[in-house]
Image (cartoon, rainbow, N blue to C red; front, side, top):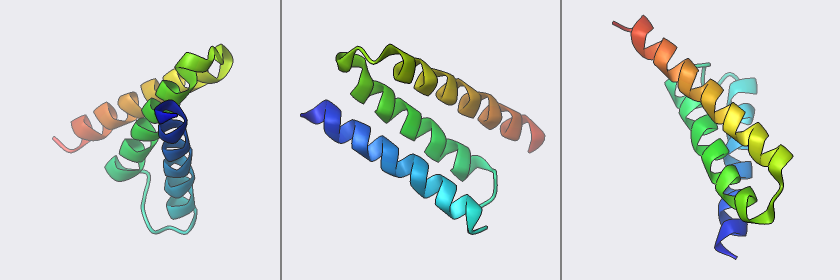
Amino acid sequence: MIFDILGWLGMLLVLLAYFLLSLEKITNGVLYQSLNLLAALLMAIGLFPKNAWFSFTLQVIWGVIAIGSLIKLGTKNK
Protein backbone atom coordinates (compact mmCIF):
# COMPACT_ATOMS: atom_id res chain seq x y z
CA MET A 1 0.00 0.00 0.00
CA ILE A 2 2.77 2.49 0.90
CA PHE A 3 4.53 1.76 -2.39
CA ASP A 4 1.37 2.63 -4.30
CA ILE A 5 1.00 5.90 -2.41
CA LEU A 6 4.62 6.85 -3.12
CA GLY A 7 4.18 5.98 -6.79
CA TRP A 8 1.05 8.12 -7.05
CA LEU A 9 2.79 11.03 -5.32
CA GLY A 10 5.67 10.73 -7.78
CA MET A 11 3.27 10.73 -10.71
CA LEU A 12 1.55 13.85 -9.38
CA LEU A 13 4.89 15.60 -8.90
CA VAL A 14 6.05 14.96 -12.46
CA LEU A 15 2.72 16.24 -13.78
CA LEU A 16 2.91 19.29 -11.52
CA ALA A 17 6.44 20.07 -12.69
CA TYR A 18 5.46 19.80 -16.34
CA PHE A 19 2.26 21.80 -15.78
CA LEU A 20 4.14 24.64 -14.08
CA LEU A 21 6.83 24.63 -16.77
CA SER A 22 4.23 24.66 -19.55
CA LEU A 23 2.43 27.64 -17.97
CA GLU A 24 5.80 29.38 -17.57
CA LYS A 25 5.30 29.59 -13.81
CA ILE A 26 8.75 28.04 -13.37
CA THR A 27 11.76 27.71 -15.63
CA ASN A 28 13.91 24.73 -16.44
CA GLY A 29 15.94 25.37 -13.32
CA VAL A 30 16.66 23.92 -9.92
CA LEU A 31 13.01 23.70 -8.84
CA TYR A 32 11.90 21.94 -12.02
CA GLN A 33 14.78 19.46 -11.97
CA SER A 34 14.35 18.84 -8.23
CA LEU A 35 10.67 18.04 -8.77
CA ASN A 36 11.65 15.65 -11.57
CA LEU A 37 14.26 13.97 -9.40
CA LEU A 38 11.90 13.53 -6.45
CA ALA A 39 9.13 12.30 -8.77
CA ALA A 40 11.44 9.75 -10.39
CA LEU A 41 12.63 8.53 -7.00
CA LEU A 42 9.10 8.12 -5.64
CA MET A 43 7.86 6.36 -8.77
CA ALA A 44 10.90 4.05 -8.82
CA ILE A 45 10.23 3.11 -5.19
CA GLY A 46 6.59 2.43 -6.07
CA LEU A 47 7.53 0.32 -9.10
CA PHE A 48 10.34 -1.76 -7.61
CA PRO A 49 8.21 -4.27 -5.65
CA LYS A 50 5.93 -4.73 -8.67
CA ASN A 51 8.81 -5.98 -10.86
CA ALA A 52 7.85 -3.44 -13.54
CA TRP A 53 11.43 -3.27 -14.72
CA PHE A 54 10.92 -1.26 -17.91
CA SER A 55 9.08 1.49 -15.99
CA PHE A 56 11.54 1.27 -13.09
CA THR A 57 14.44 1.67 -15.53
CA LEU A 58 12.76 4.70 -17.11
CA GLN A 59 12.50 6.34 -13.68
CA VAL A 60 16.15 5.61 -12.87
CA ILE A 61 17.21 7.20 -16.17
CA TRP A 62 14.81 10.14 -15.56
CA GLY A 63 16.44 10.64 -12.16
CA VAL A 64 19.98 10.46 -13.57
CA ILE A 65 19.08 13.10 -16.16
CA ALA A 66 17.66 15.32 -13.39
CA ILE A 67 20.83 14.87 -11.31
CA GLY A 68 22.97 15.75 -14.33
CA SER A 69 20.87 18.85 -14.96
CA LEU A 70 21.13 19.91 -11.32
CA ILE A 71 24.91 19.49 -11.42
CA LYS A 72 25.08 21.53 -14.63
CA LEU A 73 22.90 24.24 -13.07
CA GLY A 74 25.09 24.26 -9.97
CA THR A 75 28.30 24.68 -11.91
CA LYS A 76 26.74 27.37 -14.12
CA ASN A 77 25.97 29.48 -11.04
CA LYS A 78 29.59 29.48 -9.80
